[in-house]
Length: 373
Image 1 (cartoon, rainbow, N blue to C red):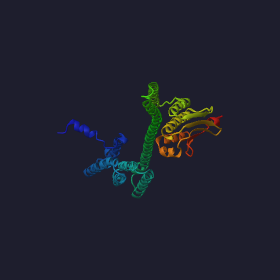
Image 2: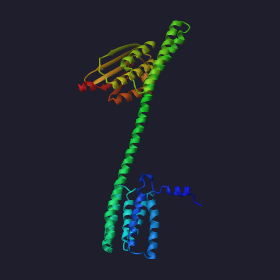
Image 3: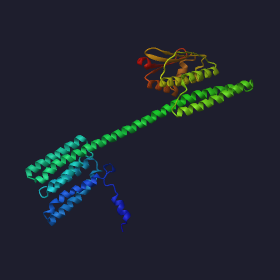
Image 4: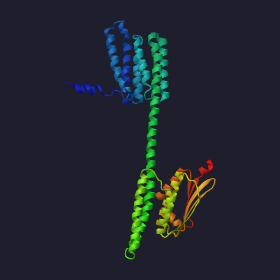
Protein backbone atom coordinates (compact mmCIF):
# COMPACT_ATOMS: atom_id res chain seq x y z
CA UNK A 1 0.00 0.00 0.00
CA UNK A 2 1.34 3.43 -0.98
CA UNK A 3 1.96 5.62 2.04
CA UNK A 4 1.23 9.31 2.31
CA UNK A 5 4.97 9.94 2.52
CA UNK A 6 5.56 8.23 -0.83
CA UNK A 7 2.77 10.24 -2.46
CA UNK A 8 4.26 13.45 -1.05
CA UNK A 9 7.71 12.48 -2.36
CA UNK A 10 6.25 11.83 -5.83
CA UNK A 11 4.73 15.30 -5.94
CA UNK A 12 8.06 16.81 -4.88
CA UNK A 13 9.87 15.08 -7.75
CA UNK A 14 11.57 17.72 -9.91
CA UNK A 15 9.77 17.24 -13.24
CA UNK A 16 11.61 20.35 -14.52
CA UNK A 17 15.00 21.80 -13.49
CA UNK A 18 14.93 24.02 -10.42
CA UNK A 19 16.16 26.98 -12.46
CA UNK A 20 12.73 27.20 -14.17
CA UNK A 21 10.86 27.42 -10.90
CA UNK A 22 7.13 26.61 -10.91
CA UNK A 23 6.26 28.45 -14.14
CA UNK A 24 6.28 25.33 -16.39
CA UNK A 25 3.61 23.76 -14.18
CA UNK A 26 1.36 26.82 -14.47
CA UNK A 27 1.80 26.85 -18.25
CA UNK A 28 0.00 23.50 -18.33
CA UNK A 29 -3.20 25.34 -17.41
CA UNK A 30 -3.31 26.60 -20.99
CA UNK A 31 -4.17 23.04 -22.05
CA UNK A 32 -7.69 24.00 -20.99
CA UNK A 33 -7.94 25.81 -24.36
CA UNK A 34 -7.91 22.39 -26.00
CA UNK A 35 -11.12 21.50 -24.17
CA UNK A 36 -13.06 24.72 -24.85
CA UNK A 37 -14.81 23.17 -27.86
CA UNK A 38 -16.43 20.55 -25.72
CA UNK A 39 -18.25 23.11 -23.57
CA UNK A 40 -20.70 23.68 -26.41
CA UNK A 41 -20.21 20.53 -28.51
CA UNK A 42 -20.21 17.04 -27.01
CA UNK A 43 -17.26 14.93 -28.19
CA UNK A 44 -17.64 11.47 -29.70
CA UNK A 45 -16.16 8.50 -27.90
CA UNK A 46 -13.43 8.25 -30.55
CA UNK A 47 -12.57 11.94 -30.23
CA UNK A 48 -12.50 11.67 -26.46
CA UNK A 49 -10.13 8.69 -26.56
CA UNK A 50 -7.91 10.38 -29.14
CA UNK A 51 -7.77 13.54 -27.01
CA UNK A 52 -6.74 11.50 -23.96
CA UNK A 53 -4.01 9.73 -25.99
CA UNK A 54 -2.75 13.08 -27.29
CA UNK A 55 -2.49 14.53 -23.80
CA UNK A 56 -0.93 11.33 -22.50
CA UNK A 57 1.84 11.60 -25.15
CA UNK A 58 2.16 15.37 -24.75
CA UNK A 59 3.07 15.37 -21.05
CA UNK A 60 6.18 13.09 -21.32
CA UNK A 61 7.45 15.06 -24.33
CA UNK A 62 6.85 18.33 -22.53
CA UNK A 63 8.62 17.41 -19.29
CA UNK A 64 11.44 15.53 -21.04
CA UNK A 65 12.21 18.55 -23.23
CA UNK A 66 13.48 20.41 -20.17
CA UNK A 67 16.14 17.74 -19.59
CA UNK A 68 16.83 16.49 -23.14
CA UNK A 69 19.88 17.52 -25.21
CA UNK A 70 19.32 20.01 -28.01
CA UNK A 71 18.51 17.55 -30.79
CA UNK A 72 16.00 15.54 -28.73
CA UNK A 73 14.47 18.74 -27.38
CA UNK A 74 13.88 19.89 -30.93
CA UNK A 75 12.26 16.53 -31.76
CA UNK A 76 9.95 16.84 -28.76
CA UNK A 77 8.90 20.32 -29.88
CA UNK A 78 8.33 19.09 -33.43
CA UNK A 79 6.17 16.17 -32.22
CA UNK A 80 3.97 18.51 -30.16
CA UNK A 81 3.73 20.95 -33.08
CA UNK A 82 2.63 18.17 -35.45
CA UNK A 83 -0.02 17.13 -32.91
CA UNK A 84 -1.35 20.69 -32.98
CA UNK A 85 -1.46 20.77 -36.80
CA UNK A 86 -3.12 17.34 -36.92
CA UNK A 87 -5.90 18.47 -34.59
CA UNK A 88 -6.37 21.86 -36.27
CA UNK A 89 -9.20 20.83 -38.64
CA UNK A 90 -11.17 19.32 -35.77
CA UNK A 91 -10.37 21.41 -32.68
CA UNK A 92 -9.26 25.06 -32.83
CA UNK A 93 -7.94 24.67 -29.25
CA UNK A 94 -5.01 22.64 -30.62
CA UNK A 95 -3.33 26.01 -31.24
CA UNK A 96 -2.07 25.62 -27.66
CA UNK A 97 0.19 22.77 -28.85
CA UNK A 98 1.77 25.08 -31.46
CA UNK A 99 2.34 27.68 -28.74
CA UNK A 100 3.96 25.07 -26.48
CA UNK A 101 6.22 23.91 -29.34
CA UNK A 102 7.30 27.49 -30.11
CA UNK A 103 8.24 28.10 -26.48
CA UNK A 104 10.09 24.78 -26.13
CA UNK A 105 12.60 25.46 -28.91
CA UNK A 106 14.09 28.43 -27.05
CA UNK A 107 15.30 26.61 -23.95
CA UNK A 108 18.66 25.17 -25.04
CA UNK A 109 19.21 26.04 -28.70
CA UNK A 110 21.55 28.91 -29.62
CA UNK A 111 19.74 32.23 -29.96
CA UNK A 112 20.02 32.46 -33.74
CA UNK A 113 18.91 28.85 -34.22
CA UNK A 114 15.97 29.40 -31.87
CA UNK A 115 14.75 32.41 -33.84
CA UNK A 116 15.18 30.52 -37.12
CA UNK A 117 13.13 27.56 -35.83
CA UNK A 118 10.48 29.83 -34.31
CA UNK A 119 9.81 31.81 -37.47
CA UNK A 120 10.00 28.66 -39.58
CA UNK A 121 7.23 27.05 -37.50
CA UNK A 122 5.19 30.25 -37.64
CA UNK A 123 5.63 30.43 -41.41
CA UNK A 124 4.59 26.80 -41.85
CA UNK A 125 1.51 27.38 -39.64
CA UNK A 126 0.50 30.42 -41.67
CA UNK A 127 0.98 28.56 -44.97
CA UNK A 128 -0.97 25.49 -43.88
CA UNK A 129 -3.74 27.65 -42.42
CA UNK A 130 -4.10 29.45 -45.77
CA UNK A 131 -3.93 26.29 -47.90
CA UNK A 132 -6.14 24.08 -45.70
CA UNK A 133 -8.50 26.89 -44.61
CA UNK A 134 -8.04 26.40 -40.87
CA UNK A 135 -10.43 28.18 -38.54
CA UNK A 136 -9.32 31.70 -37.58
CA UNK A 137 -9.78 30.69 -33.95
CA UNK A 138 -6.84 28.32 -34.57
CA UNK A 139 -4.41 30.17 -36.79
CA UNK A 140 -4.59 33.59 -35.09
CA UNK A 141 -3.38 32.38 -31.65
CA UNK A 142 -1.20 29.71 -33.31
CA UNK A 143 0.80 32.44 -35.08
CA UNK A 144 0.58 35.56 -32.90
CA UNK A 145 0.85 33.90 -29.48
CA UNK A 146 3.47 31.44 -30.73
CA UNK A 147 5.76 34.30 -31.74
CA UNK A 148 5.09 36.13 -28.48
CA UNK A 149 5.73 33.06 -26.33
CA UNK A 150 8.75 31.96 -28.36
CA UNK A 151 10.47 35.35 -28.31
CA UNK A 152 9.83 35.69 -24.56
CA UNK A 153 11.48 32.33 -23.87
CA UNK A 154 14.44 33.06 -26.16
CA UNK A 155 15.06 36.45 -24.57
CA UNK A 156 14.68 34.96 -21.09
CA UNK A 157 17.12 32.17 -21.86
CA UNK A 158 19.62 34.60 -23.33
CA UNK A 159 19.38 36.73 -20.19
CA UNK A 160 19.82 33.65 -18.00
CA UNK A 161 22.90 32.52 -19.95
CA UNK A 162 24.36 36.02 -19.70
CA UNK A 163 23.73 36.03 -15.96
CA UNK A 164 25.35 32.61 -15.55
CA UNK A 165 28.34 33.80 -17.58
CA UNK A 166 28.69 36.86 -15.35
CA UNK A 167 28.49 34.67 -12.25
CA UNK A 168 31.22 32.39 -13.61
CA UNK A 169 33.40 35.39 -14.41
CA UNK A 170 32.75 36.79 -10.94
CA UNK A 171 33.77 33.46 -9.39
CA UNK A 172 36.90 33.46 -11.57
CA UNK A 173 37.76 37.02 -10.50
CA UNK A 174 37.26 36.07 -6.85
CA UNK A 175 39.46 33.00 -7.34
CA UNK A 176 42.21 35.07 -9.00
CA UNK A 177 41.93 37.69 -6.26
CA UNK A 178 42.34 34.97 -3.64
CA UNK A 179 45.40 33.63 -5.47
CA UNK A 180 46.88 37.12 -5.73
CA UNK A 181 46.28 37.71 -2.02
CA UNK A 182 47.94 34.40 -1.13
CA UNK A 183 50.92 35.32 -3.32
CA UNK A 184 51.12 38.73 -1.66
CA UNK A 185 51.07 37.16 1.80
CA UNK A 186 53.70 34.62 0.72
CA UNK A 187 55.96 37.40 -0.58
CA UNK A 188 55.52 39.46 2.57
CA UNK A 189 56.14 36.46 4.83
CA UNK A 190 59.27 35.62 2.85
CA UNK A 191 60.57 39.17 3.15
CA UNK A 192 59.70 39.58 6.83
CA UNK A 193 60.86 36.20 8.09
CA UNK A 194 63.77 35.86 5.68
CA UNK A 195 65.35 39.05 6.92
CA UNK A 196 64.59 38.49 10.60
CA UNK A 197 65.71 34.86 10.68
CA UNK A 198 68.91 35.76 8.86
CA UNK A 199 69.70 38.34 11.55
CA UNK A 200 68.79 35.87 14.32
CA UNK A 201 70.95 33.14 12.73
CA UNK A 202 73.90 35.49 12.34
CA UNK A 203 73.70 36.71 15.92
CA UNK A 204 73.21 33.17 17.25
CA UNK A 205 76.40 32.07 15.48
CA UNK A 206 78.24 35.06 16.92
CA UNK A 207 76.87 34.34 20.41
CA UNK A 208 78.08 30.72 20.17
CA UNK A 209 81.58 31.89 19.25
CA UNK A 210 81.62 34.42 22.11
CA UNK A 211 80.23 32.03 24.72
CA UNK A 212 83.63 30.81 25.96
CA UNK A 213 85.58 34.02 25.30
CA UNK A 214 83.38 36.98 26.27
CA UNK A 215 80.24 36.25 28.31
CA UNK A 216 79.17 39.92 28.40
CA UNK A 217 79.34 40.23 24.60
CA UNK A 218 77.55 36.90 24.28
CA UNK A 219 74.80 38.15 26.59
CA UNK A 220 74.41 41.27 24.46
CA UNK A 221 74.00 39.17 21.32
CA UNK A 222 71.40 37.01 23.06
CA UNK A 223 69.49 40.14 24.04
CA UNK A 224 69.65 41.27 20.41
CA UNK A 225 68.34 37.85 19.32
CA UNK A 226 65.42 38.16 21.70
CA UNK A 227 64.68 41.65 20.41
CA UNK A 228 64.89 40.53 16.77
CA UNK A 229 62.55 37.61 17.46
CA UNK A 230 60.00 39.93 19.10
CA UNK A 231 60.23 42.36 16.18
CA UNK A 232 59.76 39.48 13.72
CA UNK A 233 56.69 38.28 15.60
CA UNK A 234 55.24 41.77 15.61
CA UNK A 235 55.90 42.21 11.88
CA UNK A 236 54.30 38.87 11.09
CA UNK A 237 51.18 39.88 13.02
CA UNK A 238 51.13 43.23 11.24
CA UNK A 239 51.55 41.61 7.83
CA UNK A 240 48.72 39.15 8.48
CA UNK A 241 46.35 41.99 9.27
CA UNK A 242 47.32 43.70 6.02
CA UNK A 243 48.99 46.76 7.51
CA UNK A 244 52.65 47.56 6.98
CA UNK A 245 53.43 50.78 8.86
CA UNK A 246 57.16 50.44 9.59
CA UNK A 247 58.17 52.74 6.72
CA UNK A 248 61.43 53.29 4.90
CA UNK A 249 63.15 55.08 7.79
CA UNK A 250 62.60 52.08 10.07
CA UNK A 251 63.90 49.66 7.44
CA UNK A 252 67.01 51.80 6.85
CA UNK A 253 67.77 51.65 10.56
CA UNK A 254 67.14 47.89 10.70
CA UNK A 255 69.28 47.32 7.61
CA UNK A 256 72.16 49.30 9.11
CA UNK A 257 72.07 47.25 12.32
CA UNK A 258 71.86 43.94 10.45
CA UNK A 259 74.67 44.82 8.06
CA UNK A 260 76.83 46.10 10.90
CA UNK A 261 76.39 42.75 12.68
CA UNK A 262 77.59 41.08 9.47
CA UNK A 263 80.54 43.48 9.33
CA UNK A 264 79.23 45.29 6.25
CA UNK A 265 79.57 49.08 6.17
CA UNK A 266 76.39 50.78 4.97
CA UNK A 267 76.38 54.25 3.45
CA UNK A 268 73.27 56.03 2.36
CA UNK A 269 72.27 58.94 0.15
CA UNK A 270 68.56 59.48 0.72
CA UNK A 271 66.95 62.49 -0.95
CA UNK A 272 63.82 64.09 0.49
CA UNK A 273 61.25 62.48 -1.76
CA UNK A 274 57.47 62.56 -1.29
CA UNK A 275 56.69 58.85 -1.62
CA UNK A 276 53.20 57.44 -1.83
CA UNK A 277 52.44 54.86 0.88
CA UNK A 278 52.41 52.05 -1.72
CA UNK A 279 55.78 53.08 -3.18
CA UNK A 280 57.36 53.48 0.26
CA UNK A 281 56.09 50.03 1.25
CA UNK A 282 57.56 48.42 -1.88
CA UNK A 283 60.92 50.18 -1.37
CA UNK A 284 61.02 49.16 2.30
CA UNK A 285 60.35 45.51 1.42
CA UNK A 286 62.96 45.64 -1.35
CA UNK A 287 65.52 47.00 1.11
CA UNK A 288 64.69 44.22 3.57
CA UNK A 289 65.08 41.55 0.86
CA UNK A 290 68.32 43.07 -0.49
CA UNK A 291 69.79 43.27 3.01
CA UNK A 292 68.99 39.61 3.58
CA UNK A 293 70.65 38.63 0.29
CA UNK A 294 73.77 40.65 1.08
CA UNK A 295 74.12 38.99 4.47
CA UNK A 296 73.51 35.51 3.09
CA UNK A 297 75.24 35.50 -0.25
CA UNK A 298 77.23 38.61 -1.19
CA UNK A 299 80.35 38.37 1.05
CA UNK A 300 80.41 42.15 0.74
CA UNK A 301 82.20 44.71 2.87
CA UNK A 302 80.41 47.89 1.72
CA UNK A 303 76.80 48.58 0.79
CA UNK A 304 75.56 51.89 -0.62
CA UNK A 305 71.86 52.82 -0.60
CA UNK A 306 70.59 55.69 -2.70
CA UNK A 307 67.19 57.33 -3.24
CA UNK A 308 66.86 60.01 -5.91
CA UNK A 309 64.10 61.83 -7.76
CA UNK A 310 63.77 63.60 -11.09
CA UNK A 311 60.67 64.91 -12.91
CA UNK A 312 60.14 61.58 -14.68
CA UNK A 313 60.92 58.92 -12.11
CA UNK A 314 61.95 57.94 -8.59
CA UNK A 315 64.98 55.66 -8.34
CA UNK A 316 66.00 53.56 -5.36
CA UNK A 317 69.19 51.50 -5.57
CA UNK A 318 71.14 49.13 -3.32
CA UNK A 319 74.73 48.45 -4.40
CA UNK A 320 77.28 46.16 -2.74
CA UNK A 321 80.87 45.21 -3.53
CA UNK A 322 80.32 41.47 -3.16
CA UNK A 323 80.75 38.55 -5.51
CA UNK A 324 78.40 40.01 -8.10
CA UNK A 325 77.57 37.70 -11.00
CA UNK A 326 78.08 34.54 -8.97
CA UNK A 327 75.78 35.94 -6.31
CA UNK A 328 73.15 36.70 -8.93
CA UNK A 329 73.35 33.19 -10.35
CA UNK A 330 72.77 31.75 -6.87
CA UNK A 331 69.46 33.47 -6.12
CA UNK A 332 68.20 35.09 -9.33
CA UNK A 333 65.31 32.63 -9.47
CA UNK A 334 64.47 32.98 -5.78
CA UNK A 335 61.09 34.01 -4.45
CA UNK A 336 62.53 37.21 -3.02
CA UNK A 337 63.60 38.81 -6.31
CA UNK A 338 60.52 37.50 -8.07
CA UNK A 339 58.28 39.02 -5.42
CA UNK A 340 60.25 42.27 -5.56
CA UNK A 341 59.87 42.45 -9.34
CA UNK A 342 56.11 41.77 -9.14
CA UNK A 343 55.57 44.46 -6.52
CA UNK A 344 57.52 47.05 -8.52
CA UNK A 345 55.67 46.13 -11.73
CA UNK A 346 52.31 46.48 -9.94
CA UNK A 347 53.11 50.20 -9.46
CA UNK A 348 54.13 50.69 -13.08
CA UNK A 349 57.86 50.56 -12.32
CA UNK A 350 60.66 48.18 -13.18
CA UNK A 351 63.45 46.33 -11.42
CA UNK A 352 66.95 46.47 -12.90
CA UNK A 353 69.66 44.06 -11.73
CA UNK A 354 73.33 44.64 -12.49
CA UNK A 355 75.91 42.07 -11.45
CA UNK A 356 79.17 43.14 -13.09
CA UNK A 357 81.08 44.61 -10.16
CA UNK A 358 79.32 43.61 -7.02
CA UNK A 359 75.53 43.60 -7.12
CA UNK A 360 73.16 46.49 -7.83
CA UNK A 361 69.41 46.41 -7.46
CA UNK A 362 67.68 49.43 -8.96
CA UNK A 363 63.97 50.13 -8.54
CA UNK A 364 62.51 52.76 -10.84
CA UNK A 365 58.99 54.18 -10.37
CA UNK A 366 57.09 56.80 -12.38
CA UNK A 367 57.09 60.08 -10.50
CA UNK A 368 53.33 60.56 -10.19
CA UNK A 369 53.69 63.19 -7.48
CA UNK A 370 55.82 65.36 -9.72
CA UNK A 371 53.51 64.82 -12.66
CA UNK A 372 50.52 66.04 -10.64
CA UNK A 373 52.46 69.11 -9.59
